[in-house]
Length: 446
Image (cartoon, rainbow, N blue to C red; front, side, top):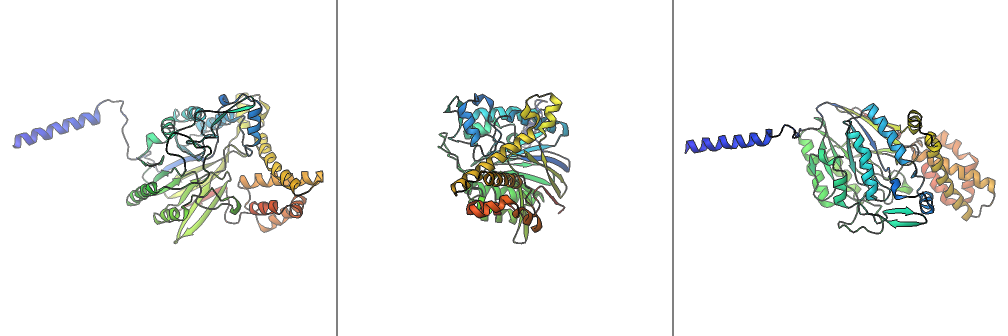
């Protein structure tokens, strides 16, 4: 019997050794993604990429541009190449995109965006993505041919996993079986949770329109708690990345942006001492901190990468410290370096701000004309004021003193709005001053 036991042990040892060491090209699974303590990652959200192959620049495309809420749909490929060139030059460890990768869930757009992102992974920069509410089973997926919108193939759940397999899923430590969520053991100090907070049909048939709201589903919530508990037992901190918000970053612009079980989820996060959540969805740059049961929980919301000023966050982790600084994509410099001669690309910063300004002005003209204002000069002044305030708010530049706000309210544009439109006044008052904290930088040394 002893000889048989020894023989079995030897056989098992040999087999295990063969499994572990067979094939020198096999990837060794490390306990963490990085062995170093200091990590830099860039985070952006809502690029809403629409591939050029889906449009012939006809009247249908021109119409969708007019209803795109100030997004650039024309020069996205150039702006992505500028961003990628900067990233390759500066070499962050990771780039994270918190959803709405595509305009409306077009499979071709996702595949092309994956091609862009591969340029980063080819240079050793890890990329992590999660879906937004426009990315999976979106019945609005369209291509634009002359004066018609035609249905195009939408991204299914299986498609998303396949197309973006190299951008998060292959480096995942654990997967949620009930959503597109996953976790990553980053280093000895941090674990990252990438959460699918979206509501979409589970089958392969897209619905007619994407759901704006979000949730952390019951089984996913259980999985989240398991990941947080494992990290806590390992004495590690967890950072969370999701598309939807946990806080109301603007009281008038909160419906459909906050997950519907936010109170429960915030309690879970503070129970496990999660310091920061990164999200997007609302398209406005904003940072907000609340204290829940004596634990501080901060949410950093990235503005949309498809609108001015095309911002992204540069985050540096070193031990227990976290430093966040907003940066902007410098397409103008890239155009100069590469010899791009397209006027809008050469002056992309101005082009992008003008797009968003015009969208805000359109809101102003519409509301004020409906309210009965006919004086063209006053209409122009008030509309320009609204456009400027929109740029200010969505860029995260609304952290203002009372005296600064008083100067703004003394402007003629505000006075015209106050006199003629209670709706616009309420809207402007809601975006004119952020009192809680500065929105473009955040530092903690806990």
